[in-house]
Length: 409
Length: 165
Picture (cartoon, rainbow over the protein chains, first blue to last red):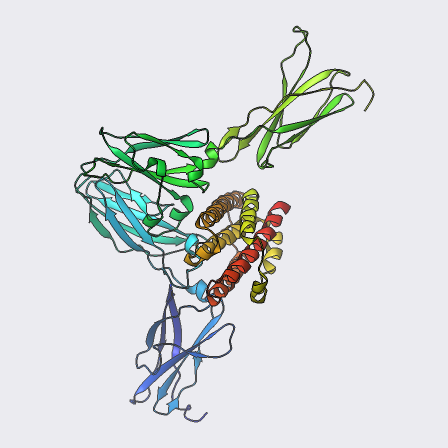
């Protein structure tokens, strides 16, 4: 090709990617003392056209750094570089094509600290925030916090909710910490962020409320806590758990609890419907009118723990010398349950009265066999949940049926 | 997990109510990667990991700031909360599966094979197309209606697969 024969193309073209930042490097053996420049282009999987790499046109260095936002990082991408001198250009050196998503390294997360008197709040921003590379991976990163201080050995914390509040620290003390991100599926981790240090504040005049607990009373939750001082007013807030499950500052997402907004007691009652998500966090703050405490530890509530299992409904069908019992749940929420059926002979003769016999299965159908013919038996059933919370329902209403005569179905 | 997926499908249906005629013109084929179904039916041990990734990707879509127009804030929070529960349960199932596989085959190196990486990539491409569609349509009412239908369909596919296992 005209003008291409005496200029050697660049060699060893290599690409390094961290988040959405690309570094293209190459080598070039100069034969002439002329003014040699380089230009790079790239091609994305779908389109066959070559696009100019931004900040990488007619440069004299053998390296260029740029970011590619908005591109499809999951499709094959290829780079090429050529040398230029005056009007002549070398041939293109096309590097191997690759998938950026698989080549990208993870940058350390950005970290912001906020001090309380006995706690530090760690705000983490996910790697490559607002970029493209990890835009769909925010929920695939785990984080490791390393914290240390004077007479405080290095401690590793793996937060599940954000911001992470590290408590039980000393006032007016310096603590340092660093954070790294790990992509759980790709098994790729970042370096640790640069260490950041912060001093906890002087001890607050008002200590935080402690031992926040929740109980259920009918259709309401009862929140209870302890506080060292008398004559305080308290306010409680709640936030859906999912809101705190991704890194970021969620302070604007905490919601007031109307019936716990300004109470003088260390408890308050709130209708369960106030909290319209199945799982949520609670926190409480104290005030004496002039001074306000920091927020208490955040309490995670799973409403399923407080949801009673309704008693099931049973159907009993005599067949020969046995009874077919079918257990069904009222609002068809029978998933993941264990069924227990008890039965006994219904006799007025107290000597002959037996203890109820029990059968337990993972299926709702029971065949109670080897019964006495033409005899009335009573049956009840209940369900047990072995999920996150072990729960047992009350027994169903009793149902009594007479077995058929002998040798009949 | 499958009970939670079913609950979330109902929640998504609660948004879908009627599908306005004016939205028909925006209907798009997001090219759900069918090869994933072949893969998970062949490599059953990875179905939990695939379900976990789909649940995470779906939660990210519904956590976008621009999803506000989709429903009332309370309903949106119920959906996000339900999806988050699905992500948590899928992750627990995935970890259980990985621990089981490691016990059975202690020589198994990386918990995910090359096949899974390819599936992972195809899922990312699929959700990238959905996300690009929302961006191009400026997160319009119709765009969200179409995306809800698509993600609900995706969930129902995996609900059936989970129940086949």
